[in-house]
Each structure stands twice: as structure tokens, then as C-alpha cells.
Image (tube, rainbow over the protein chains, first blue to last red):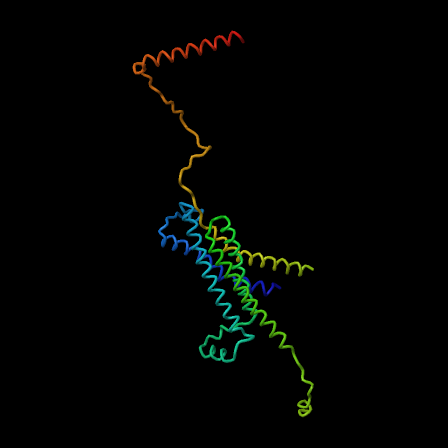
Length: 186
Length: 88
């Protein structure tokens, strides 16, 4: 009754959502401690005393979020480019089974739902960072890193989808016209 | 028909949940704020009490020539104002 794709997307969005939120909060505290910047915790959130402190903490905290995003995207990209069920090499399969990490081999449905979620976070972060940079609330280089990460990962995902389409075209069922074997059976 | 409507409604609900899940961590970007505590005077600032600056004038310190010149200037001023008042 309910869409299988939507249910899977929600399921796959839980982990990155919690991870990114936790990263943001922890990174704000850690960056402030490292740079020895004072802040107050109120109902508004973390309140800093000056604009310079705010921009500094905001930029470095966003950078930590981007690093977590890169790690997540990299993990999915490796799974889709190397351990993809549709085009994994037999030698790699046997090695993964011998190491008892065969769970890394995943189907296109699993990989693309995860990829769509992580890429969505990447694009949303790019949008927010862009607005913050234009408003002067973030360093420009943080936005440029986000842009580079988003573009590179999108292109790599497109390569994998192209590979998948190619395999799909090659695997069209082909029936041999030679029926000698069937005649022998009869 | 009703089954199709319920299906659409359920899927719309799931889609809204998904959007919420995607936006939730991004909203955390606004968890930090700043408050500029430095006091800046502006046109909106006003004095609560009138501060009357009293200037002490000690007549003894004023030289005679200066006092005479001031008196002449005052006399000329009053004469000019009186004459202009008569003309009006």
C-alpha cells in the first residue's frame, strides 16, 4: 500500500540525519574550546559575543559537517563502484566472503537510495552554505569546498549509473536458435 | 477510488516525513547566533536628564576695555531692535 521507495528512503535518512546533527552540536563546542572562544547556551542556542567569533565557529563547524558528509559519500561511492552487486569482480566477491564482510555487496536499490539521501544532504548543505557566504556569515573557502565535494560526488554517481545502464542493455535475454540440445533431450 | 485516495494520502505523509528528515539536520545550522554587546550611540539614544551646564562668570576677571566693548555692543543691539520695533 505504501511506497517501498519512500519507506526505504526514510529508513536510510535516519542515520545521516542523527550523525550530521550530532556533528554540528559537538563541533560547535569543540571548535569554541580549541579557539578559546566564549559562548552562552540559552533558549536561542549557542550565543557568541561578537560577529568574528560567530563566523569563525560557524565556518569550522560547517567544515566538520562537510568532512562527515565526504566520509559518508565516499563509503557509498566505494560500495557502488567496487562492491556493486551488478558488476563486482568474482575475485573481490570471494575475498569479501572469506573476510566475512559480504554485507558490503549491495543491490542497486540499496545503493541508490543511500546515495540519493547523502547527495540530498550535500546539495542542501551547499545551498545553506551559499546563502551564509553571501550574507557574510561564513568563509568563502568553506562554500567552495562544499561545491567541489557536491560536483565530484554527483559526477562519480553518474558514472556508476551509466555503468548500470550499460550492463542492463547487455543483459537483454537472448534465445539461441539452435535447438539441437532440446531435440536430443526429447 | 477510496483505496487510491488513502494510498495517496499515506504516501504524501511519508514524503513529508522524508522532507522533515532531510531538512532537520540542515536547520541545525541556525543553532548558533551572535549578540553584539558593544554600546553604539545612535539617533535613537536620548538623554534621560537635562544636564544644565553652568558657566561661572566672574566679573572681576574681565578687563575694563572688553567690558566697555561688550556694553557698547549691547547698547547698539538694543537701539537697533527698538528702532526696528518702531518702524514695524
